[in-house]
Length: 457
Image (cartoon, rainbow, N blue to C red; front, side, top):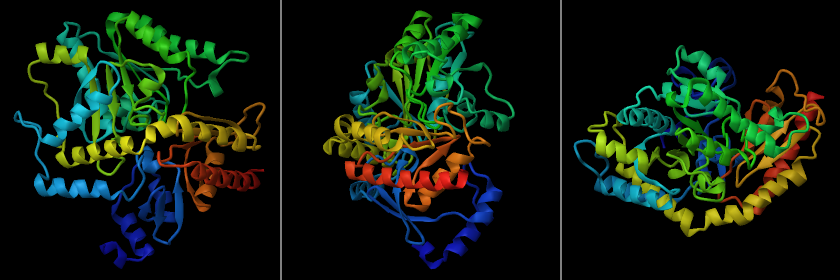
């Protein structure tokens, strides 16, 4: 590899001169220099200085089967030799895309039998927005075009994805969002439940915010509600059990489509193929990406429900939408092999019955008692740790976000890669983690918490 002829300082200088990073304060980055990740194997990544980091974020929520899987490299190589690329335009298709669509329909929640491919979750959420509004126009209801989303939701970084999401900082930089998208409260009981309010009642109240938004303008104006089953980038906010059944009831009552964003939760993260199956949700569209290929190549898949697909086929004519890399044959071949490995190794069953429950118990019994921790929560291999200055009052350190960044930096320095969102630490490790890996992660989290407390107190 040519990079091996460069020192870390040389690579950092080139990086600072030419490379703009996502979600980054570039002045701060260029003062400190980038960490150069140069290798990975199993659940670990390695930087240019030889440090080993246990990856608690599966890359960016995606490397489910771990790093260094020769099978994925080999299938990509074979597909590149046979057919490196062809598009899905001009009434054309490639075998990997066709076979992947069939496989996805087999594992999908009930009623999702059609797939539209893209390269990222952002692209597929753009597609979902266009498709939902187009559906209602084809049904003779073009005025039914309002989308209800939630505050702190994350649905991607394109203009449409940012507009659908509820991240205020992203909205402030957008300079004009896609119109007719509104945001309601999130199902985040830790901060938003009222004193004495049960989880059950809070879940119903959070769902009622969607109904109130529908009634405010009239159901004849509302096209869909979009939501992540578990709000990932917003802080692994796990809704109460009462929330999703009530959301689904409301959507059906007012004939509002249900758009599910499973970019983070899809392909085994919650102990089922999809979180829709974990929560009993029957969506009209479902966006997936990330773990579809375990991050080895960029690919997304938007599942389209039978109702929408029938109207699109019967009434739609040409759908003026698509991407150069929709159904890329190499990406689809890698995805098929990735799904095969997930099934063959029983990773979803393991998450559901073994490592998922063990992970939640380990966080609760070993981490939640720390003086800086207000709450731990987890579902499958997806967890959060709330950082507070006072466990009883849930008061945060000021400025908000500073404490979690300290914990994160100490964790990374001690060999664990995890993420801070506000004052919430989040984890989404590879599905190949074992009980031993979870124990090691808890040890490193506790050490990071102790070091951060010494700084903060």
